[in-house]
Each structure stands twice: as structure tokens, then as C-alpha cells.
Amino acid sequence: MNSIPVSPEDPVNMALLSVAEDRIDGFRRHPFHAIARQSGLELPVVLERLKAMKKAGVVRRIRQTLLATKLAQGALVAWDIPEERLHDAFDWLMHEDPFTGHVVLRTTDAPTPGSNFRLWTTLKVPVGCNTLEGHCSVLSRHIGAREFVLLPARGIFALGVGHMRRRSLKPGDKTPEPAAMEETRHASLTPEEWRVLLVLKEELLDEEITEEPWERRAASLGMTTEHFCSIAEKLDHQKVIGRFATFLEHMQQKVSDGPVTRYNGLFHWTVPEGMEARAGAECGRHICMTHCYWRTGGAPFAGAQIMGVVHGMEKDIVLVHKNAIDAHLEACGIPVLHTAVFWSIRSEIKPSEISPDIYAAWLAQMA
Image (cartoon, rainbow, N blue to C red; front, side):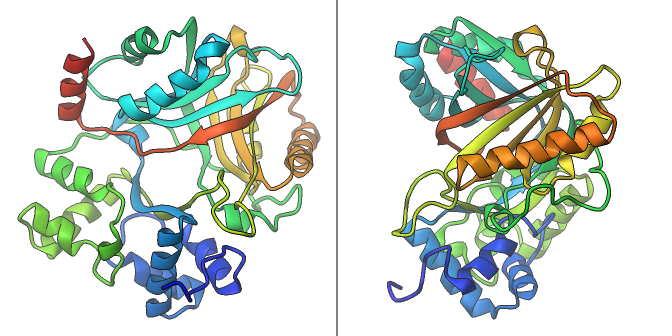
């Protein structure tokens, strides 16, 4: 295994990762076959390389993602926490709240509306279990928050990773058409569908990186692989399945040639009321953006409505990408009334739990 190249800069690995990061949409019975076809590599090479990179820590996890906005109430949450408690709060949310996903400490280059909100998280609360406000109130007691602001998504314009593929982009590179906006609507699932979904979303173990990755999952539920996959395909038709994706360890140096990306910028734009959907579509079409949402920041963030993330190896290049987006908005006749950049200085990611049963048990423990 040690003789297999694990650097993301290796040409074969670059070809593999450019597909495996975010090009396998929906549920696939044979996802590694799809990666092999799209990358032009033989299946044994795909399996061997992914296992080696996962063992080396270049790949953080491989898993079937879900569109959790269809399954739970969700929001980006900005937290105002005393400086001396920031890192303790970060650690507590990472380890004690299974419904918190991304946990990021951010800073700004200069004071700006919202710069006192240093801790940012994503949150999912299963429908019918609690409100977002109620959940954050529970968290506030444990992490010592002075204030929190909920930023639920009203529309989604871009949601992906693709760090390897985006590294060669030029500022201003964009899709031919504006990004389509996906609205957040909740799906209703049967108990059997929930059982399959909760098993499906767990990251793959090394022994599951095979030609038939779902066999063990199906057997754990007492199902045939055929029945398991047929239910997963129904879930895909309900649009609750995201991508089959390989997540890179993008913020920590894991190999000798460095991390995949060093800088993570959260961009805010405030545009005139009524232009939110159009502005999001024009921002989201820029391929450099890994995330782009219509959110409502309110007064603490100078009314920002469009928020998105860009990763890069150099801070100046990330800002050049933002300048290109700003210029494009102006060229489209969309005035930018306010804009800001919040830089990540510490970041961890884990999948958010979405099980109502697990939520009930967690809430009882926190009471």
C-alpha cells in the first residue's frame, strides 16, 4: 500500500479526485464503477488509490451524502461568544452536538458588520423534534453564547466541493447559464425508508470500498442488496439523496506537498430587496464557489442575503475570484449595497445527524 502514490498532485490521483469529489450525483448501485468511467481509470486503480489516500489521511471520508434540507430544518448559525471561550465552544459543538455539522472559527481583515460573530456552524434539527431557536438555546447554555443569529437557506444555488477541479479555474469562470435556485422543502419518509437512509449516509469503511459497497449495509438491515438499492433509488427520486462523494482533508497538511487548500472565504453580499434570487443565480454560476445560498442576515450583517464560500491556496487569489463576482454583479445591473469576507482560521466537518429517535435521546440527556 505504501508504494501507491497518495499525493493529490499525482496526475492519476488528480484525475480520480476531480471526479470523486463532486461529479457522482444521486444514488448509484455501483458508484466506484461510475467514478472509473468518468475518470477514464480502471476500476481496480480507483479502488486501490482511494483506499491508499484514505489510509494516508489525504481523503477524510467517502460517503453517500443526503440533501438534508429535505429531511430536517436547517440553518447556518453565527455565534457571538467571549474570546476566551471560543475554542472550548468549538470543541464542545464538535463532540457533544451530533446535529451540528461544520464548525468554523472565522475572522475578518477589518471590523465589519457581524465581525463579532466569530464561531459559525451548520445545524440540522429533525422535523417535529424542536425548533432551530429551541435547539440553539440549549446549545447556548453549554457554550456560553452571548447571542446567536439563525441564517436558514431560502434558496440554494451551489452546493459542492471539487477543490481539485477548482484549483485550475480562472477568475470569472462561470457556467453558460445562471444557476438554478433549489428551494428547501421537506420530504415525508416511511419507517423503512428512514432505516435505509440512516444506514446509507454513514461513511464507508475501508472494507466497503469495493465493487459492491452496499452489500454490508443491506445485510445489516436484513435486506437483500436488490431491495436495499431499490429503496435508495426511490429516495433519490424524492430528491433527498445528494452526491456520492470523496471528501479531502482540505484544511490540514497531511502530505509533504501540503494541503489541498489553505484559505476559506465566506462571502456576504447585500443587494436591493427583490433581486435576491437573481443575484444568487449570478453568484452561484461562478464555478469557484463551493456553496452559494440565499439567506437572511438581518441587521447584524448589514442585511446580507447572498452568502457563499470559495476555497483557495492563496488568499489574494480567493479575493481576485470575489472581485470577479463583484464585477459580474455590477455588469448585470445588480447593485452591491454591502459586502464582506469572513476568513476561516479553524475548521472541522462532520455529518449532521438527522434521526428523530437520536434527537429525542440527545435532548433528554441535555435537559
